[in-house]
Amino acid sequence: MSGTQLVELILNGLITGSIYALVGSGIALVYGTTRVLNFAHGELMMLPGYGFLMLAVTLGWPVLLSAIATLVLVMVLGGLIQRVTIAPLLNREDWAFQVVAATIGLSIFLQSAAQLIWGEQFQGVPYFFSGVAVIGEVRMPWQRIAILLIALLVMGLCGLVLYRTQIGRIIRATAQDAEAALAVGIPSGRVHTMVFAISAGLAGTAAILLSPLVTVSPWMGASYLLKGFAVVILGGLGSFGGAVAAGFLLGLIESFGVAFVSSEWSSVISFIFLIAVIWARPEGLFAGRGQ
Amino acid sequence: MLRLEDVSVHYGATRVLWDVSMEVGAGEIVAIMGPNGSGKSTVLKAAMGLKKPSSGVVTLDGEALQNRPATVRPQRGMSIVLERRRLFPRMSVEENIMLGGYARKAAEARETCKWVLDLLPEIKPHLNATAGKLSGGQQQMVAIARGLMANPRVLLMDEPFLGLSPAMVKTVCSIMQMINERGVAILFNEQNAKLSFSMSHRGYLLESGRVVLSGSGEEMLDHPEVKRVYLGIREAAA
Image (cartoon, rainbow over all chains, first blue to last red; front, side, top):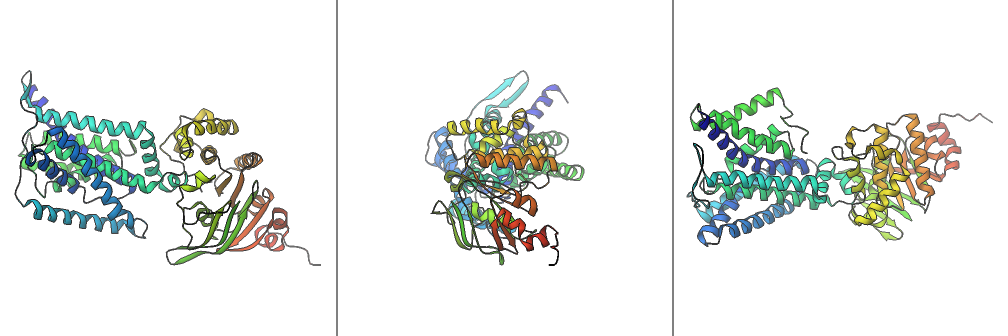
């Protein structure tokens, strides 16, 4: 393998990993704060995919405006889903199973609704960054480089909010002990809603960045949901920082794996790695960090 | 000041409190004593709004609070030190303490923090430490500091001596008395009758979710039933 190929493999791994990190960190944030595993998280990726397609392609809005509007809408939707579907269940006994059932139901409902509204065809969004970056012998489309840079920027901002602001402190306090947080006056119900909104925003960012590379369809989020869960387990359940690191690691492993076998094996490689990690280190690779 | 009138609480179909009535006056230390599972912690949680009563009234200075969210209590001058400290374990001691003043303006919280650290100077060297890594006694100090950050008029303390060494129990007792001398009323629960009633102005004995006895601390200690069951003293036959 030449040095150029190696650099391209690393870059591709980081780019794929940045999407896994965006999706996985959203799931981890919700699980870490509310102990809810959101099986409808994939649809919080699919819906902004369609939202962005409608605004940027169908209506012809500028890309940046479309992206911002899509993110705002999906964050509101994420908050609403928490308020309407999940919050009413949290006071019940045995809520954990009920929430899993409710989010699976919601996922099926949203996929079916998308099929009815937009049909079953796969729809494309044009590249919003044209051209190819050339560094020495390494060539990489700007669209792919932008994915990595924007994902890093968004996750960096999230990290900054979580660890350097009062909002972040109240989210972390609620994650660590919701009743103790309530006792000092932190409205943990609202914090849960806010966390769902942020998580939806992270999924929405992934969808917008990916939409020119993969087609938008009602099933767009399904495979990323599974990868997101893998990232959450690898990173240590509920760890935001762990999920980010695990996302990049999984991307790199897939990238190096498909250098030697067919790309159709990428998911097989990911899940073999996941099983190996669960076997050797069930608490995850980065458990306890970044929670 | 703080009153609970005929408060009942259910966990699912199980009733754990039966028409409990209690009162804490301004500047008082009041103890709730009872065996394991008697509902002592539930009384405090019902007062603090962490567990909604199925019936009954909770008032603070005449304001009914039983239907208000728990988040209102710190704003009204009530806070709680939860059982087993319940700090935010992966946050720093300073973050834990400052979050205790969440309901207050930042400048007021900073002022109270100075007062709290003067009262509990043992905490100062550990402000940047991770709260979960402190010893049990140090964690209890931080939990009390966090409770005081709301500048409460009534401080609820759920089993404040649980898991502490005898020396630390003495320290926490004297801290509670210092806090009380500064005008803060304290309602706490404890399983040790002697400890509970010797340091309190008044006390309640709770059994199976019902108040079975109440009186001043001295009266409670002198009561034959308390002596026999909880202090293991048999009075000589006349």
